[in-house]
Length: 118
Picture 1 (tube, helix red, strand yellow):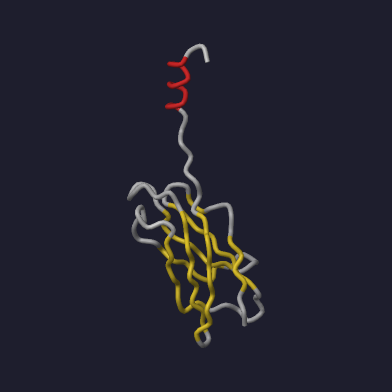
Picture 2 (cartoon, rainbow, N blue to C red):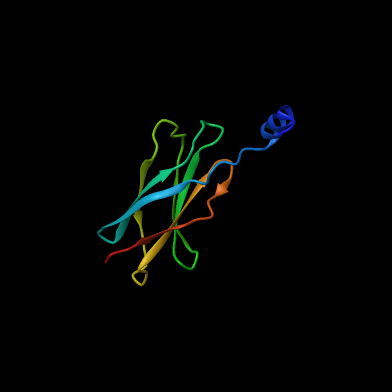
């Protein structure tokens, strides 16, 4: 490049876009009439200013079946797993969708399909 100072200025002026939180794995365990959902997330948490702050369980039709709020950043714990217990999942569902959220960018575009074994 002919003007290295200009290239550096443009690079520093370009906003950094963080990655959405990602569901690395999930597991559904039936406990009587309800389910326990365990979800392992990855996200480049930077601290209280930007972190994965929750995930939800949805039926394929979009009905929310549960929400797990994450109350603090996990900067030094990546990936991390958290659980949501006592969730009712309708008998006719063969799978649910898990969608993570971050405190800055909101809901992730990608959802994770979790098969529910009866």
